[in-house]
Length: 139
Image: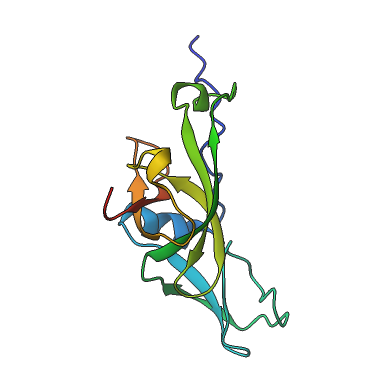
């Protein structure tokens, strides 16, 4: 009997978040926007965290962001993070307004700077959910 290794980097989609993960698999980042107050939010919720309205819908995001803050992770014992160290855990400001926790890829730590422009890309693994990550255009 073979048991699959437990992974701590993959989401557990449900019926509500399935559109988000399906869009990510197509290379598109989605947000939720409130029709009452007009503000976008991330992570996906069934209500607006700003005005509590339930009149929210999915919309495509531009994929543009700026780096708000980051930390370089040098040790993580949870699979599969140990094989990825060091990696850059980050918070980015999406062009539409919300902040998002993510990872910055394709750039050396010494090249990172608060406020630098980033663009979404996607980490894809066969048979696994596709996860949005960000990269700078000039690294």
